[in-house]
Image (cartoon, rainbow, N blue to C red):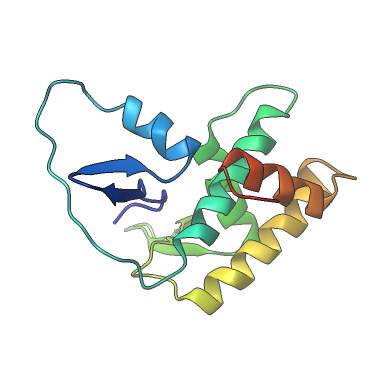
Length: 147
């Protein structure tokens, strides 16, 4: 299961339309004129919260000294916060790789703690002095949510 938030759509008549600007962007990245298989599900964990997390990471990446992939920042945050899996090699060496925050791996309460810790890491280590509330507000605007 992907850690990226799903593309959210709403039914309008016989059509599915994006819920917000980022959904529209991701839909535009899909191949045109090709059949796409979709799976319709209503989420058990908070999709808006996960979308907010990824929007905040995108804003942070846009404001780094050198552009970085959002997925790289996400992996670094997981490693830094201790959300890791350990792999024991045949040599006995244990290496750590980023763990998963996928819906089937992390419940809502655990993800809420993860997201709070990630925001603290962002405002203290990645962009010191950044206002956490301002970051969240700008991310919500990016998602097309009312402030």
